[in-house]
Image (cartoon, rainbow over all chains, first blue to last red; front, side, top):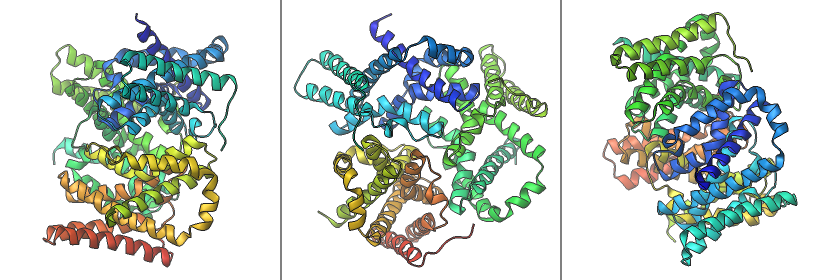
Length: 201
Length: 201
Length: 201
């Protein structure tokens, strides 16, 4: 398994995990747990692809991820409390930060491939990174967390996307631009988490 | 009128009816009643078609259904209490179960036509069957009923979709596979309703 | 700047403004304020274009509007209370009514261009005019205002769309049909607002 595949799986699992927890908190049944986990994991990329009119969707090509979440929903429901005790919050935040970086830059890159103008491309990257959580919260009948907790989660993605876009504009080698920008997002996210930085309201 | 057309209309009416009731419970006005009924009736198929990138949408080709719901919304609002007394719950559950079977298999079949992998096709069938109600509940600011009541509604659709997919794989004649699978879903739904079966949480 | 461009910008600003207010009421942070304002301004047209499968989206071609809302979100948050005192409610209602007329007819016209049947075209026009507000309210975890306040907001749009459609059918010159229908919607909206007319429930 390549590194990128490993990161991808970890990021999807963290997204799904956030869905499991939210769905259980709302006392949902198996159908709700699976659906909310699925939406949390794939909602951002799906919305981006619908806006860009890209098909087939990521999870349609890789049905193994849908099956993975399905199996996890079957076994995870009774185990979720145990899992939360075993898996430290630190690990979840790190995996989530890595996923945020990777998926945001992937979203920005996909938008550029679809000839989006530069500001729209940066927005598409942020949508990819955060709308899984937004749609999860809407389905769970909550005001989306990322819109109200004042943590600079989306801002980290936005800044990294712009670094990626500017590097592209100034001819920086594509792979280096991609990885360093994703790393910037993950790093910013971890720093703001570590020091519990908040935006003013 | 053919049998399939009759079933289609009944299933759409039952979907719209669930929207009327929910919208009235939220004290919505005429615009809300129509929109929620429309979403309840067509939301699942519309979401499936957007995910599959299929156009034109079902209700675009058959505008007579949109007009029907519009007229019903105009006349039904004052009559909804009377209607609920006349129409027995048994009749509603039966019509809904028949609709669930028909639309789930139609959704699975449409996904196969669009070359979806098998697990995704089974999901698309369930989405077609249940997301009208999910979107109805989201617009009405509720946690979707189908995610929290523990009744095996989506599970019935899921099992029937797999019977349909496996019959297709093993060369069973298409029409027979379609009707027997739809019948299985409707039957399972009615049995689980009759005995009030619930999933564990 | 042409008149139509000026109206367009005013209507978008009013939509965004309604998002600013709603997001602030929910105590959202900068990310929420921008997103909700963006959804309020462009949600209706975006949903219509997804249903019709039209691309590129309006705000993708005109990224200057997205940037404008972004800058306003940056500066507007602290100023929103002052702004609400300076800008009279009358001015907001007038700008909103003009926008409702313009966007509803534009939506109906776009649906006709996409060969929609006539009733569906009238619905697409209403969706364009009202679903920005609907999606704004859903993201803010409220039952959509336009579905429950009994004010004939969507009805005005619906009537004007039909006037536009009938004028087209009977060969009235296109530009005259467009402007007079948009004017009818704006006028009806302002009259019903002035006399505080409500629909029965």
